[in-house]
Each structure stands twice: as structure tokens, then as C-alpha cells.
Length: 123
Image (cartoon, helix red, strand yellow):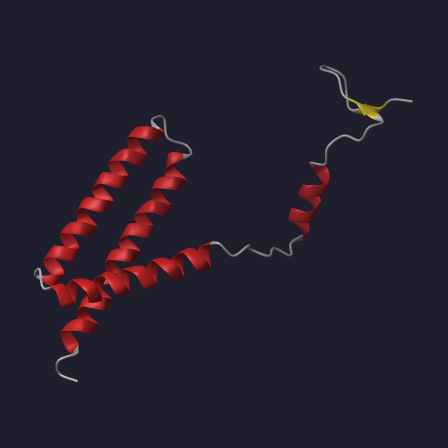
């Protein structure tokens, strides 16, 4: 068991790197939607995240291939877990959400909407 501690520690460091990488990606996407220069933000974030993760792999593992693989396994498993959890649809049972969805319904075929006039069904 004493030989496994460095491998387990390296896998835990891979988890930390993955949380940093995907957390940074989340922040980039949420801020990129409202940014004045989204392309610059996405490119800078990608370079920063990749650079720090690659440096982290080298720094934490010391270049030993066993530790690199262990760190990569921790990073990969964490990435799979994060993507799986973030892709699940959120179930919202709120009356305000239901009312909002009803109020944003598209006009039916019998409804004609023109600019400047109130929305009223046409006979």
C-alpha cells in the first residue's frame, strides 16, 4: 500500500486540475455571452487553462510516466463526471416558470400581429 500513495495523490491532483479546467470553462462561457469581445475572451481562457493544466501535469508528476498516467486518469474521470452531471436537464416545478412559458406562446393561426397594434385575434 505504501507504493500506491504517490499514485493516489497524483490522481487527486488530476481531479484538482480538472475542476480548475472545467470551472474556468464554465466561467468563460457564462461571461462570454455578455462580453464585448467574446472571441478574445475564449482564446485567452483556452490558452490560460491549457497552459496551467499542462504545467500542473508536469509540476505535480515530476515527469514520471506512472504519475502522469495516474494524474491523467483522475483528470479524465473528473471530466466525465462533470460533463455527465452538467448535461442532466433540470426539472423545475415552479408555477412562475409555467406561467412564463404560457405567456410566451406563439400566436396561433387565427391571430395576426402587426407592428404598433395590440395583439388581438382577427375574425
